[in-house]
Amino acid sequence: MAGQYPDRFRSLPLYDGRFDAYKLAAQGADVLLASYKAGTQIGEHQHDTHNYGVIIRGELILTMNGETTRHGCGDWYHVPAFVPHSAVFDQETDEIEFWFATDADVPGTQQE
Image 1 (cartoon, rainbow, N blue to C red):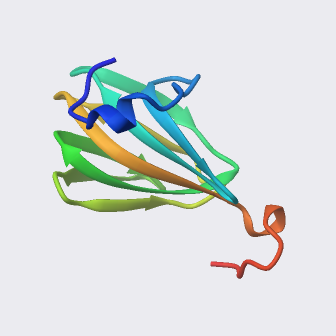
Image 2 (cartoon, one colour; image 1 turned 180 degrees about the vertical axis):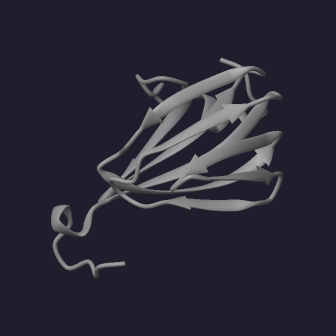
C-alpha cells in the first residue's frame, strides 16, 4: 500500500473497502489512514457514520448536496451520516479519516 505513514501505522490491519487504508479501531469510531492513487473516483454512496477527515497530502474533490468543494493539505472536511456524496482524487492523496458511529449506536453520545 502506498502512503507516507510512519512504520508504526503501516503495521495496523488493512481496511477492507473501496480504497487503501490502515485501520485503527476505537470505541464508537474507526480511524483510517487512507491513500488514493491519482485518478481515483468513488461514485455516489453514503455511510451510516459521521465522517471527518484531514488531507495530509494531495487533494480531495468532494461532491455533496449538489456542491463540489476542494480540500487540500491541512484541510478538514465533514460528511454527515446518511448524506449521499462522491469523491475524486486527481493526484495521489493521503488522509486521516475518522468514522464516528451515529448517536444511536453509541450510548451516552450527543446528537450533532
